[in-house]
Image (cartoon, rainbow, N blue to C red; front, side):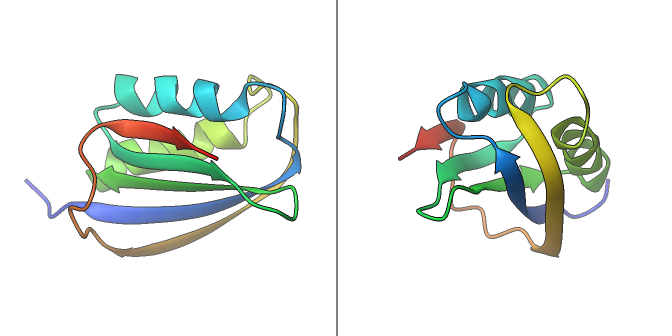
Length: 93
């Protein structure tokens, strides 16, 4: 079993006010990931997910897919070691 990782993904496009955070939370929970999806003041959504690299990769693929609510123009990912700060997955302001 590999060490858990942390995915920080900044999602650009029309992703606020369209159910994007709720949709992301559902997908993350289905994948067994912890973390959050938060609206940023500049219109992006910041997604933080922790868990196995394979499941974080699957979430990253889903964030870039045509199945998301709204319109995703670009996803900028960052990877680091999991911090274990979250229990479950939540939507934040």
